[in-house]
Amino acid sequence: MQRESLMNILFIYSSLFIGLISDGNESAYRGEIDRLVSWCSTNNLELNSLKTVEMTVDFRKDPAPRLPVILCDSPVSSAESFCFLGTTITKELKWAQNISYLTKKAQQRMYFLRQLKKFLLPVKMLVNFYTAIIESVLTSSITVWFAAATARDKAKLQRVIHSAEKVIGCSLPSLQELYFSRSRRRAAKIAADPSHTGNELFRSLPSGKRLRSIKTRTSRHKNSFFPTAVSLLNSAPLAPR
Ligand SMILES: *[C@@H]1O[C@H](CO)[C@@H](O)[C@H](O)[C@H]1NC(C)=O
Ligand SMILES: *[C@@H]1O[C@H](CO)[C@@H](O)[C@H](O)[C@H]1NC(C)=O
Image 1: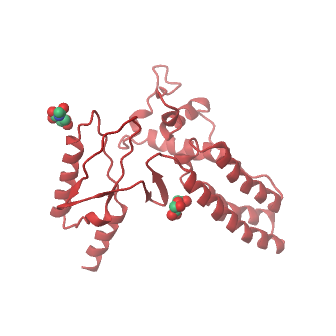
Image 2: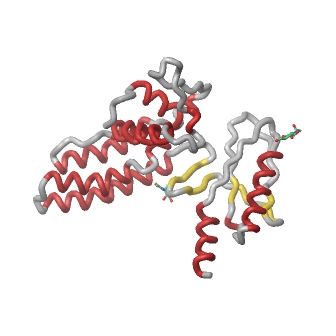
Image 3: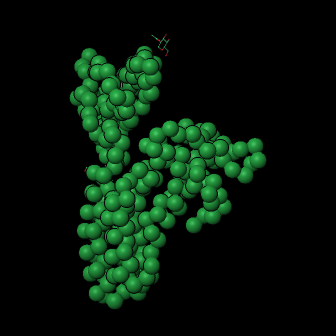
């Protein structure tokens, strides 16, 4: 019994449902939600409409107002942003909020690195500490936000790395290098997994040497994960870090 209610909570808090609405036709989107609701009820999972939010990402000039989704007879409220797996996703798809949070958190942790330095620990141990405790913060969800982040935000994060280099006394991977290696790793994983929904975006050209690049019309799309990952794999196909 205990276990069942725990699953229930996990399900409610950690589920994300994404739908694409084109030409203002919501029937497929709403139909999928109805299917989700009935799937939940046949599996004894309760959907709480009060704890569910809907966020619409719409970059058209004059988007028409939408009717709220109804879950179990109550309307779901609409949100400007929400936190998913620790990263705040806003309807403008901007990442400044999380980047300043990450910078602050990494700066706070620099304190411990400075303390450790006082104990004259070997460089290798300081680097290990930095990688596990500070770099991990700087790179959380980096494949999602790095390409779209402003130069100013990237510089803020890079400054933390510079301070760590000064404290430890050796050079450390730059933010850009970390982004490249993380993106390449993730892209290679998706490209090798036919069950991943993004797998079909990594298609080889007939020559077999390069991937088909993804056509983009906006810089927002160009700076998102898949187009950047494809051009990254094309620019340095066989150079794992
Ligand atoms: C909306 O899309 C559904 C399929 O998803 C289709 O059956 C229906 O005809 C469409 N409605 C309009 C008004 O285009
Ligand atoms: C992102 O930002 C939100 C709000 O500022 C914060 O609650 C959340 O923990 C942040 N997550 C990460 C991974 O930075």
